[in-house]
Amino acid sequence: MPPGELLNGSAQPQAVRPNVAPDKATFAFDRFTGAPGNVSDDLARYVATVASQKNLKLVRRVGAPATYRVKGFLSATGSQDSSVVFYVFDIVDANGNRLQRIEGQESSEGGTGDPWAHVTRDTLERIAARSVVAIEAWLYSS
Image (cartoon, rainbow, N blue to C red; front, top):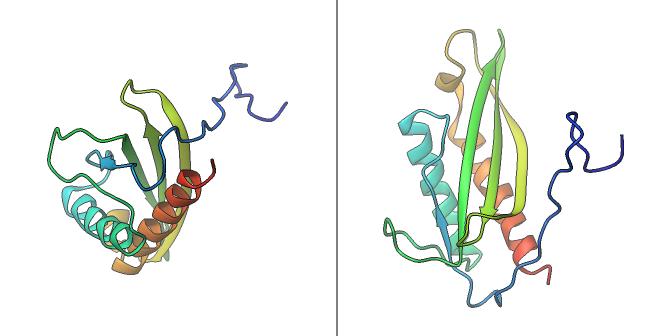
C-alpha cells in the first residue's frame, strides 16, 4: 500500500504548512472528545502550562477568534496491569480544514476495570508535552 493511502483506498491528507508567522499564530483547543471530564480538564491545564513555557499563544475564551483550532480525541484501554491512552490532535484552519495531525499513545500502570481510573498525572503531562512540542515543530516548519 502506498504511503498515505488508507485501507479503503482514499488518501490521507498530507500536512499543510502554517500560513501565519509563528509569532502571530494563536491556537484554541476545543474540548477533548472521548475522555471523562476530569481527565479532559487536567489535560487542558497541562497543555496550557506547556504551551506557556514554549511561548505558544493560546486563546482561552470560548468562541474567541484564533488562527488555528486544535481538536483532540482520546480513548483508553486497559489490561490487568496497565492502561493505554490513545490521542489524536487535529490542527484545523478557520474553515475546518485539517492542516496537521498529531497522534500517539501513552501508558499508565493500573489494574482492571475503568482504564481512565488508572491514567496518572505523569501520563497526561507526557501527552501534553509531546503534543505541544509537535505543534511547535509544525508551526516552525515553514
